[in-house]
Image (cartoon, rainbow, N blue to C red):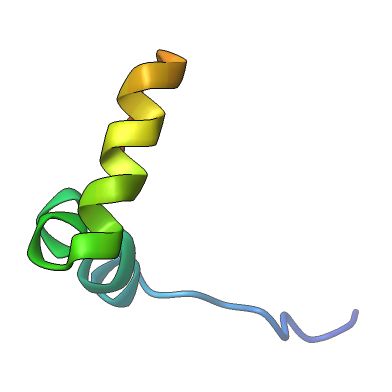
Length: 45
């Protein structure tokens, strides 16, 4: 059985690409804006 080499953590995922993390930076706000425009059900992780 091979090892699970790619194991993520929920906390890091949230901190990096969660809604609040997106709101902080200008680029992140642009991401949210684009995703709203596109009609995404989920704007961030």
